[in-house]
Image (cartoon, rainbow, N blue to C red; front, side, top):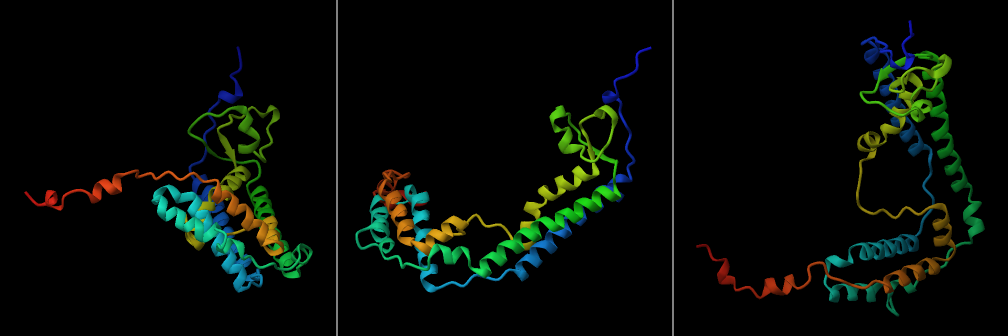
Length: 254
């Protein structure tokens, strides 16, 4: 008599796993994310800034907005804005040089903020991962309602020790459920703690911060070049002129 394929065996899961395993891990992950964000915000010191930095960042933001949405305005309006930003006497020509790049890199406050961010990003996840592995070791806590290829086994069944790895790939271990909850709660955490914003926020990377502090004239030169390469094309075309030429009496109520 031929034995059935272990991967095809339907292993029943206790319905109480949803209450005592899935939900606690998800809630603990969510609370850990909220605490981590708040603690990081409290312990991180804002770097010193000046009026010139805010002004330069505002000019760059306006320039980026113009490059992103130039097709929504007429050519005359686009040309006036480009002249104001990137013209011979434009605001992108009056950058103020700041401190050296070495000073920006070796700034103690900046280094402390980076170290604190790394610590707060790694330590809580290590603690939570150890807790999930210790409390729910060797447990298949849920099963996905669809099939997957064996390549997903290391991601979904981490911490489950089975000879030959014959368990169906759709089963999810406790540690893998924690990892899925950790990465899946990012949007919910943003909505709860701070909220989303589709508006462009000028948050430069480390390299761009050094560039802005060291030689903002180089950053402005790149932005002027990008604005100069734009070939304007109005999305609305001649619809605005056609609308203005319509006889107002045609809108009268019949």
